[in-house]
Length: 121
Image (cartoon, rainbow, N blue to C red; front, top):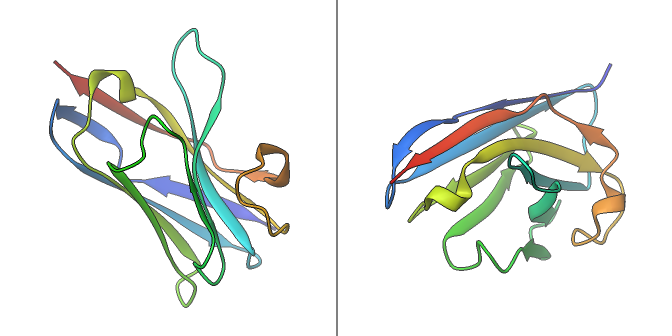
């Protein structure tokens, strides 16, 4: 069966960095990405990446600070988060799907359990 398992979350000071990893098993996915949900906020698509990495998407709030990448040999997607801000505090979810458009939230069909990222001021 399909599983997406996130790791790498934690507590970091503002301005610091974290690297999230998501290992998929059971199948491969053309589209993989990261969502986040903070208390009182809607879940938002943070970043997405196509299997070839020629297509990527970033939310405006993280553009220039976060970088999504994937290692297809390991069936793993990463999110490098730099210059973290307290507003980045959220549960981050790995997600995956089969469509080519990595910028559309509805194209993500499978979800991980989430990993907490907390940024202190």
